[in-house]
Length: 478
Image (cartoon, rainbow, N blue to C red):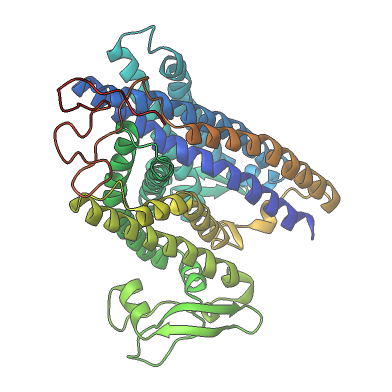
């Protein structure tokens, strides 16, 4: 391995850890804002109890996200100095705007949000929670604006070998930015909903059936039911945008090498093994014309083929072909879970069907896995460009580092990351496994029709029985 490949692996490794935590903070911050708003409106204790439970998980994710993000920023100067010198006129100010707006907003109100519920009024505390939630969305906006410009650059001029912004509105609102921002934010909400649903399902399977757990599962399934189909529509529009602005990436994702005859349309390759050397996709399982229908919304539409591009300009189809299918496959399972949940809700079986609950537990990390798969697809699919059409990745790397130096730092990152973030992740999972606080003396929630512990007569749920003379019978000793 040369220093370029090792630098790419290092950045990919660190960003894979980093992207998970901001995704959870975006989703959890909005979830906490909704919980506190419901508590202020209804004064139901269940909402503030859930708030107090999930804010602990949010704090852990937020802390690890900040730490992992700082490491990534340093890599621009160490491993990618030529890129920073070339594109710093755009990426530098955008990252500075993120700090001046989102980070200051989050840092200013985070302390009140975490520690101020008993020190400030309910209204001010809700404002703090809302400010942190808005701050996470603003942060995602600036980060995605910078990254999207690298995919679809515009609004600039190249003067003396460096990018100079001439129209900031066009720089920020570049062609791929709206699709990538909405796709990422909705993915964060879905990932959080799956995590909350999985936690609730886990506690229900262990017999911890109470109002808090049921509320967690119910809210998560409503969010998933709304967001998962919307995400599919956003993904479809994102695909059309990619076809227009990054056709080589789309061809690699589809494993599409050659144009067929006129009028045949493009088949959809469900599975196969793209072979970059042989310039073919082996063992392809195809659906005739389905590619045209999905990718161009026409029966006989055409898309670019990989052979339309020089070999040195082709993304690695062997990777993005499968990462894309992992993302889409998990998305289909998410929609299936949401539909199953709606069916069980209508039958009053949402909290009692063990098959559904196990499915929710198994699918709980799927949102984060799908985010990683989608990120790999879009970033590896941009190759060999670091700024699409303007600078190749090989040109953006720092020339002074040897493979041994980059390899040593990568090894240190692997060791430290698994120790630090592994411990943080384990701690967060331990909090989730403990479950929301249950007040002393709380009785289990009585099930609906067909669910466990449903009273069959008025006194069947009483903890003490009544004998024939009307006296209280002694409670059963177990």
